[in-house]
Image (cartoon, rainbow, N blue to C red):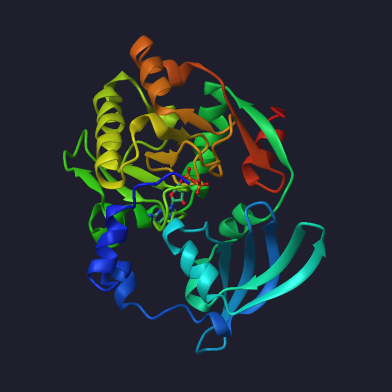
Length: 325
Ligand code: M7G
């Protein structure tokens, strides 16, 4: 197996006895009361990703129930822990043997069988919708559609971006920042995405959040934003190479359209990782976006853009009402 460079952060965590594992705000807050959660339904499960998305209810002191989304996900193997796993398993139970072939149930000790748990609480109806398995439909959105249907919709309906402001203002995840360009116009903050536990590089995932607050998405970009986008591309690659040893040629760097959160951000994922949302109907490579804007400042105010919407999404209903689907 090829020796992969270990994230510097990982080494720091070991050196400081794990204290760096606890993130700013999260370090002081009480853990989510998982045991008190009442499971309402499974929103989605994926055998391939070894993940399950749950809708639960938490009963508060007043007896009132609030919704929560819990994502449970088996994490990738960590190369440096494999020998431990083989040596320290609690049980190896034979399942079947045939000639030279045999399969087993291997029961690892708790410290080697982590499940990553992501909690959204209190969750809104829109969060439940986001994680619910549904049929999807492709939309081809013209600029007119954007102005008449999508823009009014996102202005009235979109997710709160408070978590983004917390990062930009160092109120949350401050100790996770990998790189910052503090320029208010052309600067950004690069942090690990919360989909990545930073234990291995196979599923490396970071996001760059721009300091400017008025750029909602790809649709707002013009040549005026080229210096900002070029900074993100250049400095983001440099920071990731320096910290994690992954070269720019092994990164997939892209924007989502539509995003879930309408504050401009750029995704950085390992090229070998089939990250959720990296499909052609959603991901726009940053290098291509830069080239398109350099060719035509109004490129994203002229062309139609394709994206998928889930069957229950209100935006799909709006497109249907307008006779555009
Ligand atoms: P998106 O394209 O707006 O939506 O990307 P998506 O979630 O449908 O892909 C937002 C990105 O921000 C996603 O990759 C999320 O995993 C990530 N993200 C969302 N939240 C709420 C947080 C957070 O609180 N902290 C961090 N570090 N990342 C987050």
